[in-house]
Image (cartoon, rainbow, N blue to C red):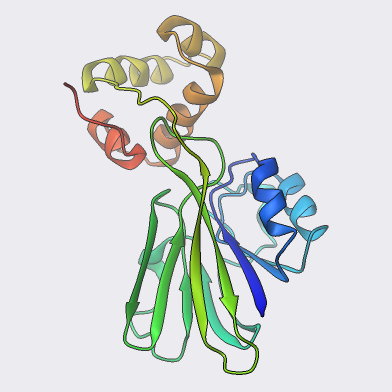
Length: 219
């Protein structure tokens, strides 16, 4: 049995729980939004790494491919950060990997299995922290995908669209992450997540930020 660790959207945070899972894998796939070369170096020290560049990966990642097409552990694999950039016809592939949405998704369409491992980096409020392991039978080439829930039982946080809009106005005014965190009573990690999402998606509004973060609606 060969095991492929699949993760995405670490955004500079490589959790120890993730490392422990990856140490049992023969190969690692990272679907982008790495944020720092240190994560790449750490992953390469664990197992052979295949990685693509995400929209949040800046100048340091210029040498990384935006798309990948490889045979890995006997599987024909295609990987890209944003599924919108995936070819329409995927019949030549066994496994299609993407990230970007921070939401776990798996489904099969004819011969191709589509997998988004979600995000296993910083938690976005109540959104799950996930990755996946693909287990491949060497003799037959059959495989199964095992979802890995990294963090569980975290209290739900509710943000109103009005409050989030106030935060975005502070971002436009050039307020620092620490200043926003202090003003609105949140961790700096949470404030950084909001700022990063807002600044990397031009034109997005408070409702759009809430939707991408998977935030619960006002109650």
